[in-house]
Image (tube, rainbow over all chains, first blue to last red; front, side):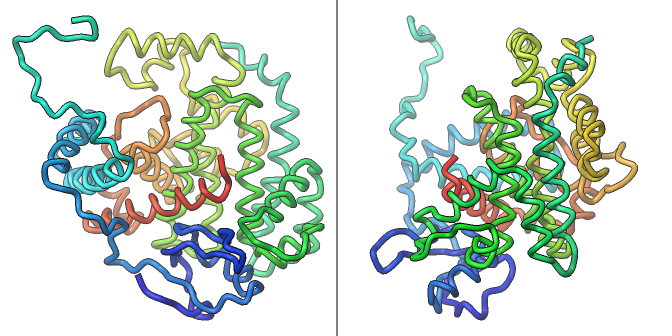
Length: 131
Length: 281
């Protein structure tokens, strides 16, 4: 991300850090499209904002490998199911890869590894809630 | 075959809201916008004006002075933001029941995600003054499903039952089997009757069969692609989770290369969260 003067805001720029009022209330949340708020920010005498850049990764945290593998297993299962009618297509293959990375990151943020059973199921064992 | 005229009797509410929305969209598309004309259109719906002022005075804007009129709202938070509040409020009130079910809420989230994705795709190749039309087309593409949920609960249940009994069945097939038509046709039937602009009717009618669109191909392609991106990202639930294969020319028409998906997915996610945070749905 980088700092940009309000006068240099261009269409499509996205706010990377929340903006607060002097009293500590949130004025504008990150993720907002800045061209829509230029006038409002100017009227609030705000001169500079942080914006996302093309190469930015939203999540700075690195996922521990073990948890990444757990998440990847569940995400790939879900994504392969919804993409099952889109095989052997360059565009859809790439979209699928991107979505898998995105969902791993998103589910990590929401602490979803807690709900994934790390033990591989035993094919011989009884299945179902009531065994 | 379902009786669509049963729904026609309840359409006054839709008509009142859509007339102002369509007129407003037409106005803001003009290269030079006259604020007086905009105020005249917005003031036709007093409940929407109240909501617009309430949102303009939300702490999120941190305004020192209270906004009391639409002119002030436009001056302070800007026309783009007023347009977005107006569009989302109008469409939300039009489509969602007063106490929306979980299914309706998930469909709404999906619709907002498709709107954001469609507008983002437009922003890559289309002039800015058309972006909000793409947003609206994405937001309304599943209006037929909202009509089914709101006015045809028995049909809605039968479609769900059909899909439950046939795992993997596409929703369009289940709809066809239950009511001999699809949500695309229901949506197009009503929006055509309500004199929606052609580009909206076309994107509602053809968002699963975009190759049949005779006009407005770019916007139909953007809605189709936006619909699939939102489904791929699993935002909300349209009732049909499967991503549909799209021919290469659709992506090419939109100026998208496979390497662009990384940025597209990231931008859609950010913008979707921005909208949902702002409007507290």
